[in-house]
Image 1 (cartoon, rainbow, N blue to C red):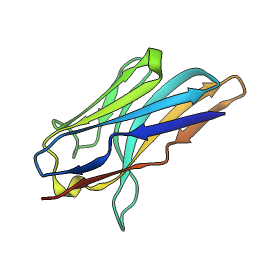
Image 2: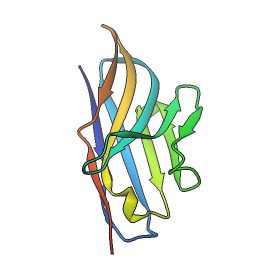
Image 3: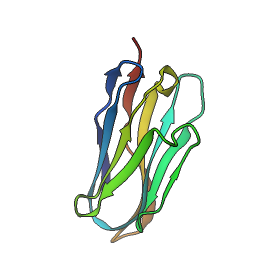
Length: 119
């Protein structure tokens, strides 16, 4: 069984910064990619950023220049450094990972962490 555990959400003022973390644990053989998605009230879940096993990254246009995704392979952990936060960044942020275990290859989701940008 594989689990993704997120941390680092909270309340921040506009222009502030937050760093989200997501650690994968369990029977992991390899991780193809890890990423962050977000879902605001009344909206569909959308991609924020993704990083592959080789280190390639892809960002939503709304995240480019403000957010940075990174990972520590030895810890099976992905980070999202968010800067210059705006009220429109308010959402539940979900970690996502494409993981190969000893049993199969499967896509996993974390439980989500709330990010609120407000003065």
